[in-house]
Image 1 (cartoon, rainbow, N blue to C red):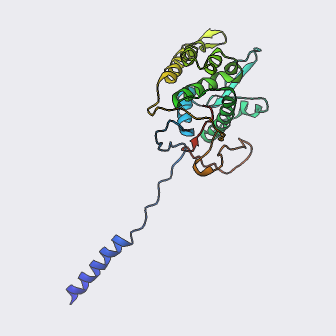
Image 2: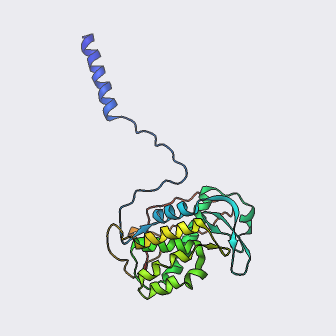
Image 3: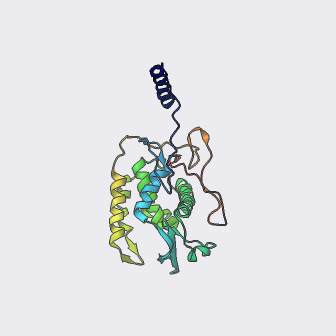
Length: 243
């Protein structure tokens, strides 16, 4: 009888371990973690643009000198190549976090895409889009919108436009080897067909949207007092009307 009792207890213990097993506590994660992406030739994501620009620009947690403007005024940047603007003087003496840098990058990309959509009149494949975002990010709206590259592009002269990347290699009037190399990477990307061929189609779509019409995730308050830590959807489809 004791043998049967002990056998029954053992069987009940095994059953309880199998069917009532407690879920493991998820491992906490910190900082940025890219989301898996499905290849697409009609949508790029915040993640893809972030990865490209972060690789090219690097990151600085304090302000650093970043050349001069057309009038000879000193320029400074912080984070992922964010150029410090009038009204952001507090950033000159700030030490920012990784999250702060992403917040600044969010706003920069939102503004850049909106401006590019106004000024680019032709359809682009994904690699052309990313190459132009990289160029626009580093030279700013004034130079980009007045460039021969944009004029040729809007005429449909893609090959001629690609030849203009090499001209964007100067800083304060001097050729910079790093900019020469970056311009060549942009040119090669621009000329490289995407894995899946096709064109972005024009349409009235928000510069950044998600499947099912979820709202844009760009934060509006940056580095101004305590705020809830934002949740980033790095796989949010980045749908461009004209790009």
